[in-house]
Structures are given as structure tokens and as C-alpha cells.
Length: 470
Image 1 (cartoon, rainbow, N blue to C red):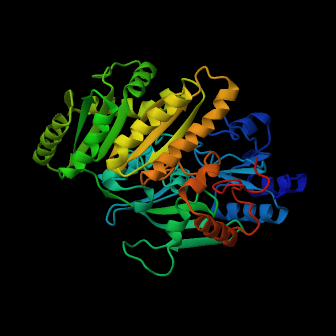
Image 2 (cartoon, rainbow, N blue to C red; image 1 turned 60 degrees about the horizontal axis):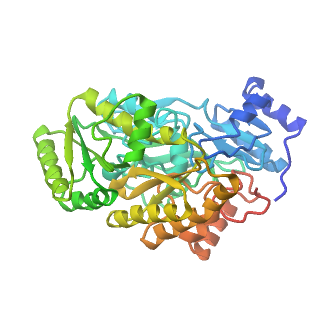
Image 3 (cartoon, rainbow, N blue to C red; image 1 turned 30 degrees about the vertical axis):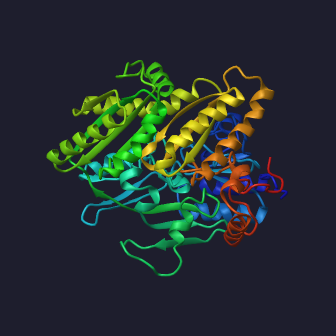
């Protein structure tokens, strides 16, 4: 596909639509909006546009569609698969001005928000009403609800409460051709035709731009307990995960951290954490409304993990200690990124396959002479495999792609898939045929064509071999 660059006529039209101060063409803005949190990729847009309403977005997309100029929607820029990178240049459409929490409906346990609201802000506002929005990505302080919807974000609490899609009742969205649609309804049951709401969630900004969302909330649990469990080996920690669930206990979070992940987080945060010398740790949270029931669950967890080789079990009950442990877990991602250039794989397998996945990842990385740091949401089988460049020269670093392919092939062979919550985006599109058949990919391409006949919305994402993509 040969796209056009925005000409002076289009730029002037955009300035008229959203205000000159919200159309950026300077080099600093193009630098900022040409990156996200994915590796070292950089694709500068020609212009950055910041609309404030669905009607403005509709007019922008109509104009871009007519001019055959690509448009890349962007939330908080925290993505890890290159989903917000304008690989063909054109327009980056930033939704940061659309940041209103429109309503918290306490009676119906619902919230209505715009896409530029950060996840943490929504959670904190809901808590003021004793309500809870569980999806909880590590970047919650900066990630936007719109981006969470685009990638179907999960986070640590997905193991008990589910992922973003499980909390969406209805959407307003603008199609690439400029039409504004409303999908779903603010009800708990709805089988009126195809589920367009769920089709848009996880579509990575390729089918439409979400401009308003109606979310389901739940009552806020009154009590929480956090447990840190230390193990002598990665395999023992991974094996304990399935055993916890088999015992009848469902934690609200169950995270896996190998020693290297804990150590880099300690260094970055300037804090020491218990048992940081252990080869692996599980971090578990249980929550609920009855303290006695939580105490029973903690005792049950302790019995299970000790039977599977745990060397220490530490309980945190007060808010300060709980927040400290969560800070450790949330700080791992940024700490790992600060070491060197890296590639992060978002592998996910059935829980019982975790030991084989972790063992296989280490064997593959050793064979290629590269260092990996693993951590993630063990409770739902989602392990983030970070492969570090360290001192590798560029030619050996390029060869790491082969190791990545082997890791993803192993993941699929274990009954898993290549992305649990980060999406395919730009960085993973070449690996999509590992997880999906040619027929599945063809059907998805056809859906994309129905929504976006000129392929102007977030092109160069998800699908392998897209003509003209870098």
C-alpha cells in the first residue's frame, strides 16, 4: 500500500477542526509520539492530532480516509508490542484530551468513561464509592483505558477477576470511514446479534477508535492478605502454582518472579525484599469480605507450597507491607528495561505446563548464549520472558529472533499462545502464523477489510507480510 503524506490543505483542515494548538508538527512531538515502550523501535509521525470529541475524530478519519493518509490511534504510549507506532508515518491520533470520568453509577455498579482516563484514576475513583475495577496492568498509573481495551489488558488480578473484556458492557466508537457507532447495552445479558463490542476489544486499534465505554464494576473487597513464598528452583515454584488451584483456593493474584527479576527491582527501588536470594518466589494475594476465611486460605496455601518444596512463607497484612510487596512486583518491568535493550515475549500456557515452559525457555536461551529474566502472572499461565541484549554485538542480537521463534513454538506446543495481554502489534506480527492457521488469519483480514476498506487505521499491525510495511 502506498499512502500519502498529510499535505498543507489537510493540516490546515485539522487545525480548524481541533484547534491549532492540538495539531503538532514540531520535531520534539514527532520524536515523543514515534515511540512507545516496545524495545527500541522509532517511527515518527508526520503530525500529531489531539481531538476532544467523537465528532472531531469522525471528521479527522473521514478526511484521512479521503486523502489516503494512515492514522495511528494512541493512548498512554505504554504498549509492549508496537501497537501505537505509526510505521507508515501519517497521523498519530492521541486520545489524551478525552480523559473524563463521566459517571460512577453506584446503584447499578457501572462506570462511564472516556478512553484517555488512566486505569489507576478509574480504580481510585471507583474506590471512593466502595467499588472495584479489577483489571490492573503494571502500567496502571499511565496506561489509558482506551489502550487497555485495544489490547484487552489483564494484569495480576486477572486470575480471579478476569481481563478487560469481562468488564465492558457497551462502547461508542468511530469507524475508519468516519461513522460513529454504539455497541452493546448497559445490561448484564445481551445476545442481540453479533457481539461487536467484544470484536472491538483486543482489535489493537485496527477496526475503530473507542471514544466512550460503559464498564461493569463490582463491590470492593474489604480485606486483603499478601504472601511471599520462596523456592530453591524455578521448576518448584512453577509446579506449586497448579497445586494451589487444585486445593480449591483461587487467589486474587498469583505472580511468579525469578531471582534476577527481584534483584533488579530491588536495585531500582532502593529497597531490600525478603528472600531475594531465593531462585524463585511466588507472590500471592487473597481478598474477600471475611477475615476468617482469608486466614483459612492463607493456611491452606502455606500447606500446599510447603509440601512442594517452599523454603519460606512470609505474610503481609498491614497496608504498608502490602504496598511494599506490590511495588516490588510492579517495578520489575521498568527495572528490567533499564538494564539493556531487550525483547519481551508475552507467553501464556495452561497452568500445568508452566514448569515445562520455564525450563524450556532457559534451555533455549542457554543454547543461544543470551540472558533471560522471567516473571509474570503465573496464576493464569502468563509468563513475560525478557531477553536481554547485554554485551551482544548487533549480528548476534539479530540472531536472537531465531531463539524467540523457538520459545513461541514451544509455547504453542504446550497448548498456549504467543500473547496473553500485550497484543501482536508490530513486533510480533511475523510470528502470528505460529499461533493461528492461514484460514484464521484470512478471516481476520476479511473482517479488517469490512471495517476499513482502504486500510488507513493502524496499518502494519497484527498481520504478517502486509505490503509496504517496514
